[in-house]
Length: 341
Image (cartoon, rainbow, N blue to C red; front, side, top):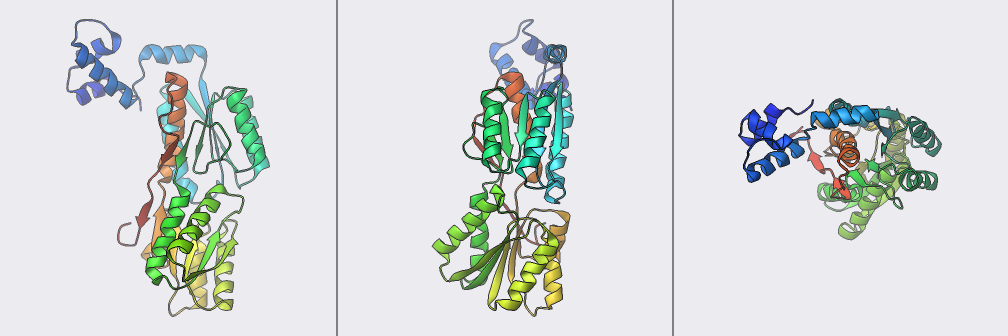
């Protein structure tokens, strides 16, 4: 929703007329008051009518958004953030064009980016597949087409993207290791389940987990890292096979999707005592997993913010020629239990 002069007046504690004079440089007004009002207006995202008309006269600004794993429950909150950003940016003459990827596939993502470029996008927010072809494509957009790029949820090294919005995934992996270390007393065996080995996010989480395990809990043995393709049936199968064939596992860390399979595996195995379990993302299914004592801890990464923030950053670049202040705009690492969901 567009910010109004009345809202700015209320925030600044002045009249509508004072705000109008400050924003349009007309009439007598204390310079310090005018400066404060303009600062408040900018922070609230106010767009003057003349700027709206100017944007409209030049044609609609288009920002492309490319995601991955569209069917995963994690994307529900990401997409809610994207939709909210789209509603707010519509008032500024900006249209969001979204292309949802179904997997972590470079060809699928290249096709989506190419399709958006053909529509004439002026900015791109992307959950990049970490590979050379995507790296080259993004640098081509930035250097040759002068299209600013913001990465979110996953990042990609070796590009000139404006910034990254998302969790510090390596640090979150270390957090997960710390949680399991405390739960197990630092002794036993831990199974790690990731999604796609081509997924930068998954790899960073696992790397951070293994790093902290070696440094802080040398007596906690890594029983293996297995890929599930974010599929719940595969997660179920991995847990059942591992627990049946490798005694002594007292910790499980699931770094990606398909986490519904954990409950099925524990139910089928009819365990007297399940392994301590750490999962990711505050989705409806994972809320239930905490409530039902299927998992002990959940690490949430503010998925809504990851969808909402990147289009707004690009809008500031395109409308205000605003430089990005922070290259890494990390979302919080929130630890949830059944007691605080």
